[in-house]
Length: 449
Ligand code: SF4
Ligand code: SF4
Image (cartoon, rainbow, N blue to C red; front, side, top):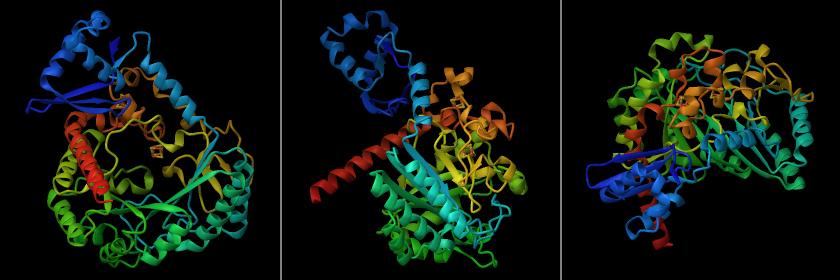
């Protein structure tokens, strides 16, 4: 027996220690005395087998084994992760498409990366996309579809047409189908949400940059008018129809006061219990948004702000989304069967490349060339070739970070490390509190149900 290389412990100062394993996501609250026993085991690793027969250690050892805080001597955890990473990335039984029926948008955000290409998907492209999915449907286990843009709800007619075709095909071939939508929230009325629900859309991701006075300046409508009031009114209408993930965009201009004001308003509008919050680090990802680069945090600086925002939101009783959890790979760009489809039917691997035709890696009208040169930066990306990643104690939470940053933006390795690399200790208390609260809520629900 040996200790997992992905164990993290945080003494809380109240006689308890938080134990977290990055590979399984297992979290436990240990008595300090048990933690001391664990430390004893670590310093007598060669004797763990014989100690497991002693009363004092036996139960602790079996719990640590169950949570994979202790693993077998012959286990190579990095090799196991690498194999799982390969299996999942090259699994062709899953199809993931992120589809932009249009890149047009009713907003004019200061940092938007969707530069030109205002075209909508033509009837011919819609048909070619349906044929493309039909071609792949046989043999699939799951097809997951995300509607994005531009603002996808500007072309709800196309979403409906494509969704019906996809749902029919999946039914015919017994493929599980699920969908989500990324929207700016302006057109997302209750009526729209019900239509989306009928199309097997289960959740929506909406972004806000802050309270009204901030949102209306940073994310105004294309005609310059404010967007906040309508979005919040829509969220109230939608809250019992779709799952809402609210992304709060954060940059150096975001203040604590802005954030608290936003939470106050969400609470006042009875949205607190109905949304899940997460924080997005606004990035100057390509030439289009280079104008906002000086307002952007690097990952290390963002990780500190992120802890503060999580703490405030948790103290206020909001539910947090995207807490540190194990991944098998970093993003959909690394998966062989995931693509972004633009309105012309061109395929891309990464959001940042959409609309840049020379970065496209195929077209729904033709067979995918498995050796297309634009696939290589993503499919050949392998964090296990990088010594710092192999040695990293948060590798299962990060999986090497974003290939686009390294390959195209030539970022320093450090700026590719996920924030958990820098803030995991501080986040453990937040994860612990969140889980305790979720458990209490579930208990309350089962009590009342
Ligand atoms: S490669 Fe990076 S920027 Fe592109 S989708 Fe993945 S995480 Fe996002
Ligand atoms: S990119 Fe950084 S945080 Fe991520 S696995 Fe590699 S070394 Fe660890």
